[in-house]
Amino acid sequence: MDFLIIGGGIVGASIAHELARYELDVILLEKDAELSFGISKSNSGIVHTGFQSDYRHLKTRLAVRGNELYRELAQVLDFPFVPSGELVVAFDNREREALEAIKENGEKLGIPGIEIVDKSWIRKNEPNLTEEIECALLGPTAAVINPYETVYALAENAVANGVRIYCEKEVTAIIKGPDGWKVTASESSYESNYVINTAGLYADRIARMAGIDVPSIIPRKGEEFILDKHADRLTKRVIFPMPQKNTKGILVIPTVDGNTMIGPTAEDIHDREDLTTSQGGKQFVINSIKRLVPSVREDQIITSFAGLRPTTQRGDFYIQEDREGFVNIVGIQSPGLTAAPAIAEYVVQMLSKKVSFIPKREYIAKRTAITQFRHLSHAERNALIKEEPEFGEVVCRCELITKKEVKEAIRRGARTMDGIKFRTRSQTGRCHGSFCTMKIMAIISEELGIPYEAITKRGKGSELVRRW
Image 1: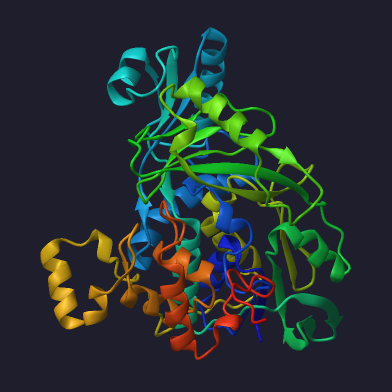
Image 2 (image 1 turned 90 degrees about the vertical axis):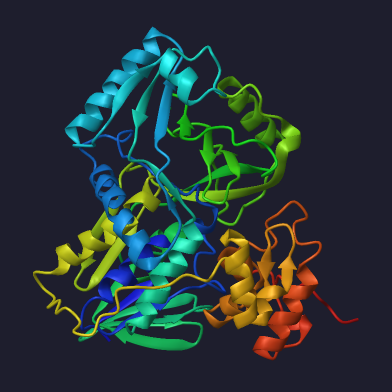
């Protein structure tokens, strides 16, 4: 084959989507049961402006370009994209000076529309913010997306254009041969001219399997908390405090689904699998957010989760062809989600002097999302039910998800309860699946022809039913 991609998060899916434009044979391998189950699952979903990172860094330039690319991608691939804008707030003159420096950085990057707004503007446009804020830097190009929905959109389009994706394929060996690379994954072997390493938290280990030394990954855990939809939307925009050395701070994030998310924390750890949340983390986030939005309450939180960011001491993205035919993409921390489409573009440009990228003659540009019953008018819902009665069977009452949507998610590749959740939003409401879990399991069992004992939350080891 021409290209083998290791890792099915937002970067791997973006590269698969980009390579699918050309007459190439491409395979993507993912170690988890489904795509986006690693770093991307727990991402905050912010499409940053890019002005908070040093204009001299590669990650900053790619973030600014990625911000531009998402607008067209969202239209042609039909995934949610909400142009929310963002505010970095300042409480005093010292912080205002720091805002001026961030603004200057953004102007060097050519980011449009950035300006410092005063207290009266903030009171008018973001009335829930504390009156102690003196001014803020407005970045109107910021937006929010759902990371996992975006991954699935990119991957579905890639598959429609010939890319092969295999999950539950954990790479165990990589050997350089005379004609390319041999990759062993879960007792299967693949030979490819090029390997692209987008393995996220494990990118350094994958590189070392190939005999390449790259910056070591330092997992940085972030705990985040989602507020009930019944709570009023706290802000219209993503709200940042003044950024610190290792973090952009504790944020207020309006999501595409109508909830507000708060967080994340930032704690360097050693365990690459530690996704635990804590009472201490929750209290720290609540206290930090109250400084921005005094009205937030702890009892508004309906769920918590943690994610890990693959940081390095380098502080910038590492994107290099270290050996002939082996490209390492390491340390893709924030703003990695924002930069992902631009990383894909950058890799193709980097290799274009050596690889013949011939545009695909019958390229399928568009992809259509699963119909979302909850967003339709009553007339549209009635018309759909007449055409397809399974739209009339509500499976998830909290989020108004129907049997037809669940079945369509399975048709598109969902094999786990989390795979259904990320594609449809079932199980994400206040009851956390108490009413819909068994209904969804019945549909999975029927559609895939598997017993209940084989149904998992997120892959092997997370089975939900056990026979005694």
